[in-house]
Picture 1 (cartoon, protein in one colour):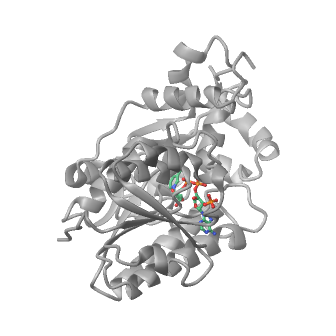
Picture 2: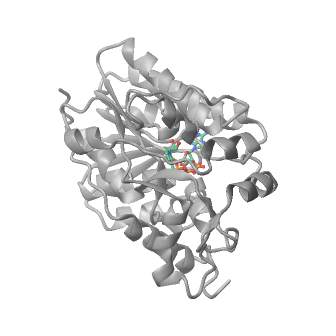
Length: 356
Ligand code: NAP
């Protein structure tokens, strides 16, 4: 049982990121003192959205300079904190050097932050933002699960540096975290495993892969049809609530799949039709697998033929019952997340304001 004192500062890595933005907002709204180590604490452009939410909240935010690959750089920000959120990790699919761009920051960054927790005697709990990518590699992996559903007991064994390297980076980073945690007993580790995150960001111009995925529904990339690829999705606001619940629930333990809905690309497109279907080329058809197989690799380097055969026309099913039961995680309808996200993309100019 871990009780966190809300009078102490709370550290969060990756505060400038899409997922972390709403966690920071929750903490500020609770009146907490947030320590935000970021790569560039002088960047007005990057910090303006966090500063805007801090201006309206009872809590405070203080920036520190740190980098995942710079050993010891989290010391000052972590000093006196009981609670640490580690969200920072690159979420990119198209990379030239997966070791350098994904695995090193994910794994060495996790080691850097958690070893700092070992040295910082005030730390009682670390919340790690892992991913469902650390649970499965391809939708085909669902066949090998004991009950036809992904649960917290399952680990991704099919991704590698060469194939699905982002998923591999999340798997090795989470394993590293558990190993470091098990060597000591002062701080506990609670891991959040979200699937694809959707919904409006605190920063409307976020660079997360989430935006790229949902933007495709409106920019014409999928006008011939959406591939039948199963996904889990969770709203970024519900995910932030779950992180904060995990932090302040004394008995929280282990991994939590925080996933609102088992869905797929065509269903995600369908919930946009009512409001945006007149003005945007929202996909209305399913792209046949043979066409994805032929065209996919030309459109997206990561969409290899192997990936297509192991993911297209295959469902995704995740079990979110542990998070509902132990953390009280709740989920809004997927339509609300998709519509709010799409609208934010129009308002921010990410999507053109008229028919594409
Ligand atoms: P994001 O918007 O790209 O945020 C990534 C954050 O990591 C940014 O704050 C970035 O800082 C920071 N970062 C990257 N490299 C760093 C480095 N070398 N040193 C210090 N900070 C560094 O991505 P996101 O979608 O919010 O992802 C956040 C977390 O959620 C990641 O752990 C990701 O794996 C996980 N996740 C995301 C999704 C999703 O669908 N979005 C799903 C499952 C899990 P800068 O601002 O300086 O670049």
